[in-house]
Length: 340
Image (tube, rainbow, N blue to C red):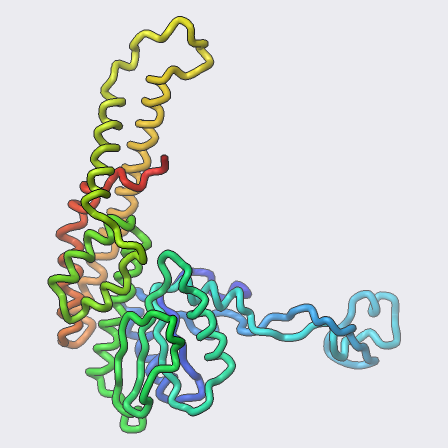
């Protein structure tokens, strides 16, 4: 990544810089999303290419631009590298890190008949990212000029939007819908990464039934393996009860005379485990609550940044559902994911 931009960003926009409407749309959504501090990666944030070792022996010349240090120091008559030795290749490690670390991949489908090599690389990253527990959610953006998506069939798509023919200009309303859907996708994926599977499933499970307009988008963010919320809550309550019982026991109860002072008794061991569980549960809950208390007011301002539309209303409703149920969710599943 060459150190150009190390701060994580939430959105990766796959677009073809050779297509005017891609460039213009990217610049607009980048500027407007930044107002609520959702940041898309730019292609200028990292080096697309990297130097890799070539199997061929390097070739040298008396003149050139790249010096071989050893030949230069020994005053070789041909100290310049003319070819071979190294070759440029796509920096796939950086590309994969940026794309799969994002919350949303906004895929502006190319209208050109031929697909650029860069788009092919990015399609490959999306296809190989399916094994992640919490992969980025893909949003496919087509136009009326493009009949169907070029995304591989095994890449799950959280949302599809069809915009007007870019030759006739894309309307403000369409851009507004795209921004609202993108913001909703980022929120869902952030929530899954900042909470636990049970808390996340509980919160979004309520939203799915109340927000049919965006239920498919929300469903795409849920864990791949369904969480049995009733069983999860029972397990959490069981651990919490055991923890409370251990911490209430008399700390000064008599030790078994046959146990060395250097060895923990069963009671001391159980109390130590209980203290660790309580601390881990408190930390998880506190960190998540602090994150939400920072995010909620910021995203609530989205209703002022974006024009009125059903998707914006759905986003606002989702925020309210999550905020009202956040403490309840943690109280139900607080002890479920503490380290054992």
